[in-house]
Image (cartoon, rainbow, N blue to C red; front, side, top):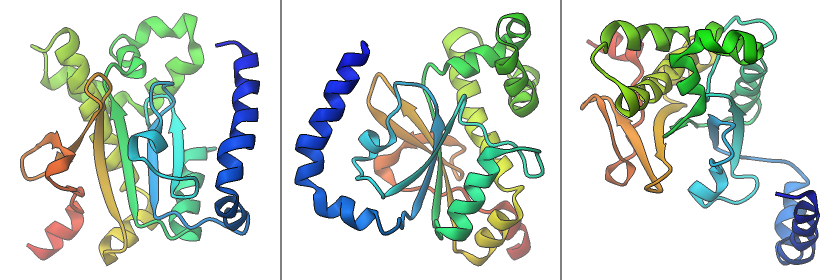
Length: 224
């Protein structure tokens, strides 16, 4: 896409959308109050606001390669800072981790050794923060191949990142008090459909059948 198309789009935004929504933007200039943190991949095919049909100010968004959340305590973790700000400063009530079909990061994870020379930064990112997903898949699903293996890896990575979120003390505290819900979503690009992880069934199913927040495992243990 040529840059002159970007400039044209900026002008159209200002002259049309912005002018017709000027009051909304004036209100947003005084602060934000989103209730949802949406964590997803940097992939250009993913547009959280388009998917959810939300307006500016309604989603707090964190994006990176592979929708990965480094575990609590990781040094220089911009994702951790974003999570802390969203939950503590903005009072976020729901966090969604949304992976997607045909994820290039997960394709790379399945052959991570080949990335070391060509894309060393991508290699380091995946090796350090997605190794748990890779090991889980390789050790437990040896019979899976091709697209079936990739799909499984993407799904397992979403759940691994939910577990990483739960390592943050602030997240644990808000989950325990019922002030926060976590959601694991899978976006199927070719179908335009969101699937949500249903813990009681142990699988991702169409979101239209319910919200399916991921249960707090420690809370379940305490109540048993």
